Image (cartoon, rainbow, N blue to C red):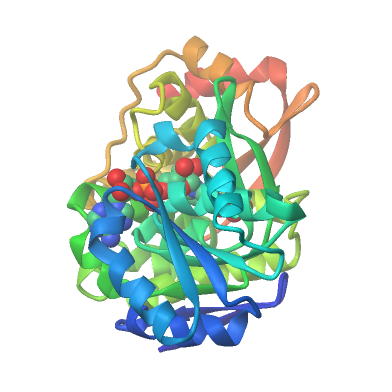
Length: 343
Ligand code: NAD
Ligand code: GLY
């Protein structure tokens, strides 16, 4: 088992096959409550909720399962309201906790519900997608989408523990594994050349070291900027255009695929000499790179994003593979930048 300690929030990320079976005892050591709500979706629940609940019960923790339909279109205030109402019906107290069993949608929604219920209860993340394992389960960003844009209602709420059992990824469809690889390629491209080179091999055969490397990069980044005011924005390499693609598609293009398109586009605009190697890594992992929207459509979607600060937008600009930087660009120049990225 690999352990990564995150000091912002002071919790551990445990990574190792078979950890789901031990989840109850690990969680019992990390939180004080003895009652919880396991929040999951209707794909993951039938696969893994029973094993998790058995493990929790064996550790003396009572667990009730709240399940909602899978998919980004359910990461909404309506599902959030149903989740917190469920916590109340099951009489969870401030000493109790929530467990997110699922991908980034479940993790983001559960974190936000835990942050708000009784002004905050503990939350344990059990990621079941590669994307959630390498990114969304760690760092405390949680949110739901509004009609006006992605993740517009949310909070920073650090988990009390993250239990990542990579054997749960065995049931993940190839396309979903690929979506997680978009974030892995982002970490490699923006922070670590060696990790980037590893994405050209078969990650699915042995994901554990890559998950641990990504989590360490994320940990190191957020420890210098927990609340996303500076350095942490670098984790959004490829995301300004990526989020705009998601929004233009009405969220039918998954987050990872949209990030893939956004990554290739931003390299074309700002680091053209690296764009072909980025494209190679993305395509080798089954990810799309061509954006099916115009610069005008993307620009108006991007302007409702959280990365806008008044008259400027924070863009993460790529450099040589393994590096990136943040630049505030005037809103008025965004359309031209996106047009360049699409050319
Ligand atoms: P997801 O949660 O929608 O999961 C993708 C699909 O895979 C779903 O249909 C789900 O039911 C299914 N699934 C999950 N685990 C499975 C398994 N083990 N076996 C079979 N099927 C499984 O999508 P995602 O890509 O995990 O997460 C995307 C979300 O994460 C977006 O909402 C994005 O905004 C968010 N995100 C958040 C952060 C953060 O820091 N909080 C970072 C990156 C992305
Ligand atoms: N996924 C970007 C962040 O956590 O800041």
